[in-house]
Amino acid sequence: MLVVYGATGYTGQLVVEECLALGLRPVLSGRNGAAVAALAARHGLELRVAPLDDPATLDAVLRGATVVLHCAGPFSRTARPMAEACLRLGVHYLDITGEIAVFEALAARDAQARSVGVMLLPGVGFDVVPSDCLAAHLSRRLPGATSLVLAFHGGGGLSRGTATTMAENAGGPGAVRRDGRIVAVPPGWKSRRVEFGDRARETVTIPWGDVSTAFHSTGIPNIEVYVALSRSAIRSLRWSRFVAPLLRTGFVRRRLVASIARRPAGPSADARVRSHAALWGEARDASGRSVSARLTTPDGYTHTAQAAARIAQRVLAGGAKAGFQTPSRLLGADFILELPGCVRTDL
Image 1 (cartoon, rainbow, N blue to C red):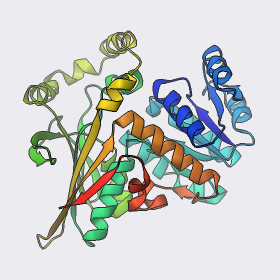
Image 2 (image 1 turned 135 degrees about the vertical axis):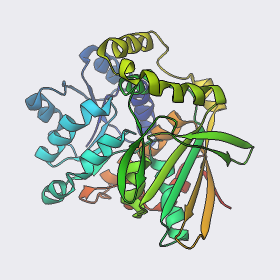
Image 3 (image 1 turned 180 degrees about the vertical axis):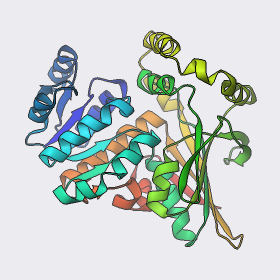
């Protein structure tokens, strides 16, 4: 049995629709009973309602399940109670986070998960399936690589959930991996021009999930992740260093979250169809040899639904591995090529 928790959110609903397209009949769950009931009635699916802060009720939701696909962020608050319930009940855990702290917290529970036969696999969406598979592919092409650079652009607009996560992390530092350790760096720490195929774009470092996951997938000790932004956006990111303490105050974060709540739930279906994402990566070894590749995918939300549903399908069919996993460690670097609209090009 598959449980989709957070099924009524913007991304959760896309995930449910993709599950149905694959012939899966997930049990729908979340915190808002009325919203879950309405969605379950629309699709003729079973529902189970539980808040994450009630362990007994959450256990009742997961009892009998094989895997939970957790879609309710911000995962910095929601991943721990769901993962703990999965560990208690022997249920495999999937989520769609992109938050470094969540990846690292779940990686720290690897031994516990192995001892009870549970798989912990965060990041089964756009964060970080395509970039993780690209990292693994580059590592495969250049064994012994010592540095990895990943960059992306596009992917469509932001959902309210994604924007809320960003707002709650506002004022925080950037992050890179240096000699195997995650280290904090200033926002907008470094920039570089990246050729994405259509044209070269200015990119800037961000604390993307691969700073965590690519290391677990490849063992490469030095990792930086960049996103393409306009010059004005890069300047704003760097100026945020000076107002970071203000951005971290509860008052400002509450105001940001309140303004986000008035926005549309996420990009329209038409906007998603018109969008795509492009990724680029380069691995380099100590002698200066390098390999690089590009990858294109559909928009981030469509890709998330397609990847998450297919990974859940694999796990239901017996494809889990106990312990902390990353997408490429579980499914291989070429899993990305099985997903609709994904094309990889070696350079």
